[in-house]
Amino acid sequence: MSKAHLDVVLTDTIGTINPNIYGHFMEHLGACVYEGAWVGEDSPIPNTRGFRNDVIAALKQIKAPVLRWPGGCFADDYHWQDGIGPRESRPRRINIHWGGVVETNEVGTHEFLDFCNLVGAKPYFAGNLGSGTVREMRDWVEYCNYPGDSTLALQRAENGSKEPFGVEFWGVGNENWGCGGNFSPEDYGTEYRRYSTYLRNLGDTKLFLVACGPAQNDLDWTRRFFTKLRKDYWQGTDIHGYAAHYYCGTAGSATEYTVDEWYELLYSASGVEPLIVQQWALMAGFDPAHKIGLIVDEWGTWHKPAPGHNPAFLWQQNTVRDGLVAALSLDIFNRHSDKVVMANIAQTINVLQAMILTEGEKMVLTPTFHVYDLYSDHQGGESVRTLFVTPEIETPKGKLPQVSGSASIKGSTLTLTLVNTNATEVAETSVRLLGGVLKQVVSTTGLSFPDGDIQAHNTFDNPEVVTVASQDLVASSDQFGLVITLPAASVTKLTLEI
Ligand code: AHR
Image 1 (tube, rainbow, N blue to C red):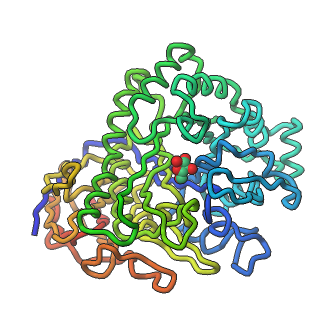
Image 2 (cartoon, rainbow, N blue to C red; image 1 turned 180 degrees about the horizontal axis):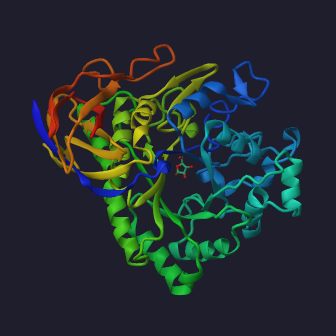
Image 3 (tube, helix red, strand yellow; image 1 turned 180 degrees about the vertical axis):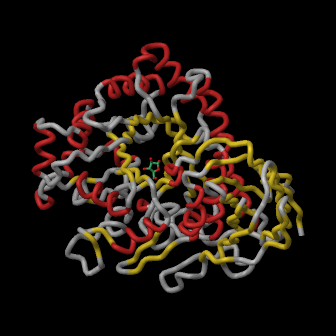
């Protein structure tokens, strides 16, 4: 058995955990939007105005706060006018990035915003900078947000929504260093300035504009992009969020891996922490007051294509290893709640590290979904400092802490989430509260799966192999803290009254 220790410094507050850190991403890719969410009004699958009821209920359960749409790479080849008006007369386009399939445009602006309302999430639109025009993006804002009687606002009313939608979050392009136009950071800086000049607050909605940040922790992109902005026109440029993308994977498969590959993936997932710290430090040189928030608007595991699935559709299974990646990442975002204002895991349904898999009328919830369910109590909490003393696991690329986590306070409730990355050893962890007392251990819940099965996952035939269950792990407790035995390969949530 390994031993670890944690001090939770209740008086050392880091910042409020923006609920949008628990955000999601839905692209017109594979079966994410079509089949995954949208089945159409005439489908035998129970739906509300075309969207699956089971999927809506699942996303409500995890309190999905924000949904990024329509891409991804798809966004920079998407023309929003294709997705409004009578559905039967919408143009059919080719989805050039994802398998060359025909995009019917059945789900467009009105449908997607209806889905957001059904789920209770805010929309985050990714605008087309790569192949669109400034006018096109500016008009999309007007179409969505203008309350008056401009031609575009009247068209919106004709299409079913007299009231403006009030879309606040707008991405000004996506991966513009790659599929979003292959720009240099300087050229993207020029384009960002030009586009953002025309994206205005219309009506009551104050826009939150997001610039495309680096691939992984590319500091060169950030330095050159901000240098260009500052040199030419820094003062007049509206930029509220700066979005990095961070994916992790291994050479192995999503469901069959060795213990070494287990550690390799978890180590690589932990790399989002140096990204946050280093990008933030670099941004401070240009934005010392930190008015611009850091966003990780695509992140998660990207495994080898699954046999029997179109490789362009990025379908993959999701095991407890993916669950631990989610937990480690969310704990990192919580611990950096002073820096990270939004994060959107890729992607919500049937694509990459999905919450939900669907097959016809069947739906399965993944271990990643269960981690989001467990962690949802952190949303809106005040993140407080956690100081870990933990054994480390040697991986070929570096050392992985065995025990890590995060803590947040809401009123008299302390939510503490803990991950034991060790695939085989339990960790006896002493937790001491500094600056307050423990009144009661309210509950202990965690990811539950067959003992020792680090490849455990849910299938359509066996959907409850990995679930969330209450667990009896607290060995002792007093007013100063507690001792908890964290199972091997575990994610645990403690709800404590303080
Ligand atoms: O999430 C899949 C793809 O990954 C997105 O379309 C793109 O932005 C990224 O490269």
